[in-house]
Length: 349
Ligand code: SAM
Image (cartoon, rainbow, N blue to C red; front, side):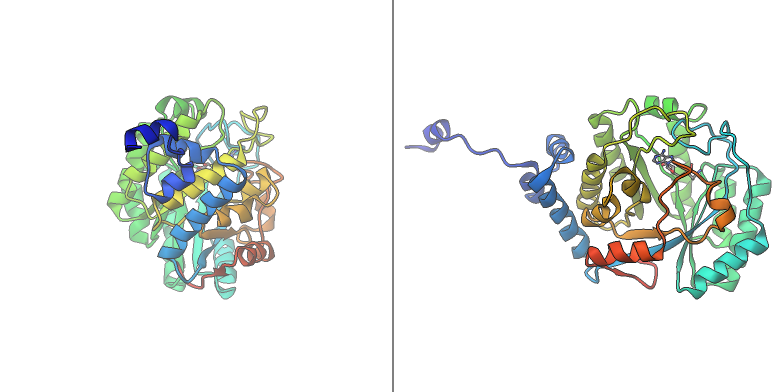
């Protein structure tokens, strides 16, 4: 029987999306199939992602970060965020002395990567204050790598923060769809967000970005576009959170995002962009028990320990919920161990 006839009699079995990925297929159809993987197929997808991670990071260490939520003052009206300016919330900025005490405490614990996060506040007053804090932190703890996550600022303000000594900046594009962006973040635009990302990269920050999966109005094709946009930017960090309808946000009555799609997206991010840092976030756990461990199994290599923000401010930084899952050291250690990884002592990049 010649090949043509045999193909008619026994049609070739179509590769599963994971087999296709393993053989280098990066087509949209394959990525779409992988986003929907479940059961054994999902396990195979995660296994492929872990192999991609471990080839780049053979020591199997995760970057261990601490976070201090510096201020909840915010000028934005994001419908998904419980800290939007419309939310009735007591607003705070952590004072310099208390901040330095917390940094000293974290440094003494051995932490060498610190995230300073806040609502978006582009007043020169606030940015100047952060720059002063950064300078002081780097003077006293030069081996502490600083990641800022302060939202959209001007080019000059990014320069100021970079010159103060911060090495990295996280700014999520949230969605690659201009219309969804404007629906989710009224008064802001995707073009503006992407311009900020370009500024950050140009100013010399090691830059991270990413999306939220499972948001109102978002289709699987939008998520695929997010994955592709991640590949067009010169990044060292990338992230994906799943939408959690916090009780104080504009989208509080919307359904929660699908954690499995978010995990599959993370696995694809690892396979497509193996050299970048990628966190497993607490909202995966909030979305599904075991979700944060599953993030490590899907190729993540960063965990954030939530023991930096002073207790009195924790409830006032309710990104997705007042009852937020904020993992402490013991929890992070347990999931890292269960994933057969270990805490890195120094920054991974
Ligand atoms: N204000 C800064 C900014 O806009 O980049 C940093 C703080 S912001 C609260 C940090 C991130 O939290 C956002 O970029 C968004 O992706 C995520 N986030 C906020 N609300 C969320 C929710 N309900 N579910 C999942 N992720 C959420």
